[in-house]
Length: 501
Image (cartoon, rainbow, N blue to C red; front, side, top):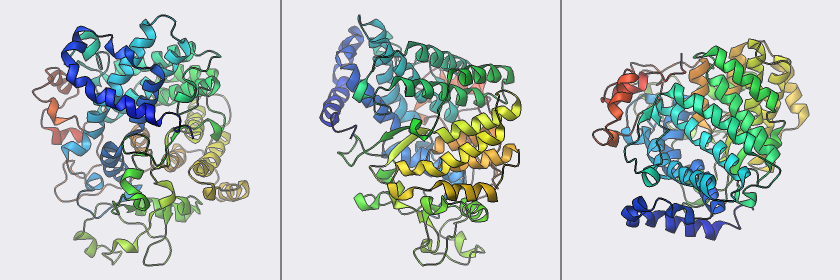
């Protein structure tokens, strides 16, 4: 329902957006031209672009991240993620789309709100928080990226932005969150043009502090004192309080490129999309069967050939699966993704209450937050199981079933148990699954050693920059050197990002 008022306006904005290149020279002379766009429509556009389309969700989120993290598996050769092979355009897909769409429009919007007389400070606060959403995903996937100068081609004629060190990016993102939250007032900000909270300032404040908590905990291995300091700020500020605070966009079955869920544009066969390759991974199915997890029937459907849930082992193709102990070569023998959660009208989640509770459980165990780690953990499990009702009412799990699960799987006071639950709670938000796994090392995943892989049989540590940056952006070489990489992009996947210690 949030979308209905803005469909035509967003379509008009797309026309304006795609026609900007025709007046590139004029825009460089007149950098304020972008401010002609209504900030409300522009914010809606940027949120939708951050949710992403079929291109980057298919490649970076599903083919690479979900497969590396063993949520999904596939025998299709082009689903390369769990085979650790290199496909430049797949790996760089988010980098390509984010800088061409999300980053430059967000920078233009922030410039408008900072310079236009009478602008609403609440709108600026929300925009600053959302800018962190964009860049924290980018730097987590790629390491050092253009940040301080990014998106300023029109505004300051910076055609080749410098790559900034991830440590510097993180410090600025935390400061931007604090500043953005401080700008929020009792006004409605973007109102209905805000597809996350419809302008609800209290929810934006809790989201901002929850995002601060996530970023702070990302530094737990790289800079413990800084991490602890920002965790304290986030907790004192007030983080998400229930599943009502989940940050998500509710998509609809609308025109292509406007308001459809990018994952659904890959997997929603009922609406004409038909990549039928992925199956639930054996890692996930086996863990959920062992723990009696009610989410197994939420995430997947039993094999089309009949029988109970059966996960597909990772790292196999159409040939090697025939020699696998499963004794089958048919994809119809394995559990597949529940169609209810991968429609073009499905929500796209950015952060959940469950994640926040698991981060607090970890912080409490480290002595960085007061409260009971067990209570936070139990809250997180309950929320993580029950959050799927936002996809469809049929996915509701009642409290009694969650209670049964918690009794059968009591908190054992380990970081590993928290890690497994975080991994499950972030299913489909695979960018976050990949990032938290790299930081914590949990859950413990067994790598594969597929023939021709480029990582020596280890799970990759990052995505790879766009090959088009070679020879185009003269600042790339310095960034590669600083991180211990070369322009042989196939070797970059094993180099950890700064916070991955």
